[in-house]
Image 1: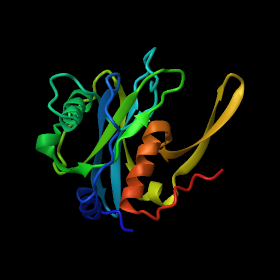
Image 2: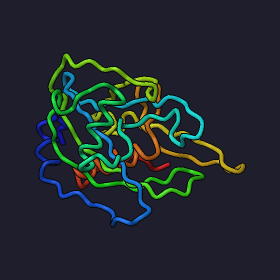
Image 3: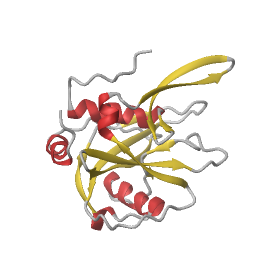
Image 4: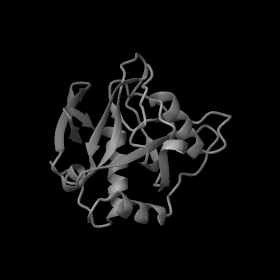
Length: 203
């Protein structure tokens, strides 16, 4: 399937996203999958999170976003506020809202945390938009969705917990690895775009 922004917009705008049941102790967050067309590729924006003690996603590649605040009217507003704070991009002015995909329950290692994250999809329309990353962001990177979808950028890494080796699939984006929660979101995203998509992560 061609991964043009217009093709993505057509499919995502018609998608009915799945949501988790709300519980009193559930925390809610939102991220933005921000797309731009680059020659024959569609690219998505990722941030390399700055390293901070106590942050389970410290130093990870991620979609920009964050937790819902009491003043946010809805999770889409959460995403737009967080992106403005984290990378200085005004999604309302500089991008087109495309739609929403299925929410994901986060499960950071070593944390007893009920956190549900909802991804919202946008197309960047202002090519002159300036990015101003804050202290939470070490770097902004654009990665080819086409290479991820086809499996060309798939990679395998490993980590150790209590002496046991665990392997994981990820996508290589300019030498950084997209894995974990963000990788799961991309799996869901590609599954929405193509129900027959093969995740390429057998190892």
